[in-house]
Image (cartoon, rainbow, N blue to C red; front, side, top):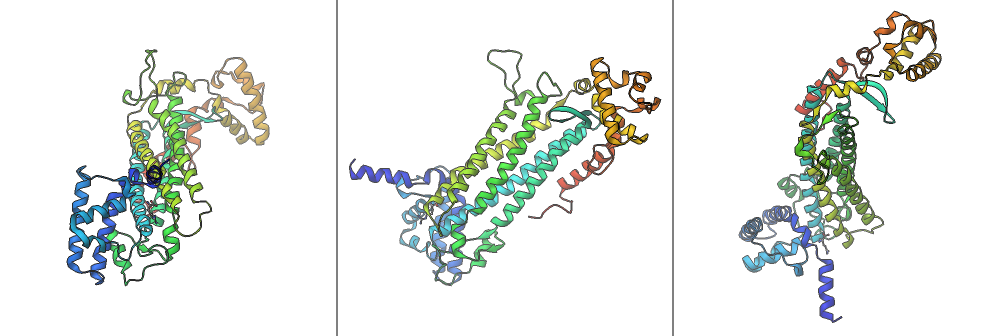
Length: 458
Ligand code: ARG
């Protein structure tokens, strides 16, 4: 290979412009704030600052209008913008990079980016929670089988089941708030690694850019990507929750369950089997979760054992983050819409619990109330259940004398045990009774209005 070819190959290998052009807005915003500060501190002339800022503004317009030519030989977004600034305003452009390094510049761009994306995510999570609350409210009285091991266990309200996801997404929101809070630190002023030797005003730049704090160790500030990892970890958890919801939607919409119908807009037909309505959106969210996990593993591995301070390895933080951001946003948005449009087939849900064996716990509790120790009651009802199953009868179809074969403690009032009474009995904080679920819905609505004391503030 000729040296020239080698140079080209290296140039391509180290360039990030193909993907970090996505940070142009943050880069320009950061440069403008930096320039204003340089002028305010008398480090550059006011008139030079004006020229630089005007130039940067017009570059932003060029990029937004698709007129900007990104050049691979200029490596990254910082150099591409700076080179264009030289073309536009001449040598004054050379003053922009005073008291700054690309190391603190990229740390800044990334923090601005993650802050924005975290707050967008919180918004999207809220919208998804709202859809869940609406679906729960529209089906407030529906009793469904609750499962453990995917076996019918006890009756629960469908609304209670849906609100379990509300809780998961609430914790996700808290994690993104938390991530946002730790990302909210200005790294600019750290220079290449040891700080800068000019009388900069870091607090001013922080205020200009909406940061509430400035970093307190320059070495850490340029080599820290914890905030990227935290975002990706929070995203991985959120996707894990989405994948569980996706799985239930897939199961529930199958012909075997038939509990729900997904709006056609979110399904696709089969090219060969005309009866099919495939839950592709849910399946893809389940699948994309794997990609998001992969990105998290990648950034953790990239950062592992890196010596201080900046190392070029860190440039590899971007593509995974961007991919996670895009996957997360699109998944949350589409789920908020899909959940809103779900139709519950109340008859099919009822049908699934016609054989009322999931009242076994309540029968055992009944015997306990009549004085039997729980373990004995459990064993009596286990035998009773086996008998009922073998004779193809529901509990309520058994005669009192059949009940008496298992325990003399059974009485006429055993027939008062119904799906409804079972649900109503669980009237304990966090339980599935209508009263508790009503309270949970009220709390959920309060959280969505932002009036809940537990809600972290931005
Ligand atoms: N493109 C680089 C990155 O994304 C920017 C910082 C480069 N700094 C350097 N000294 N080469 O990490």
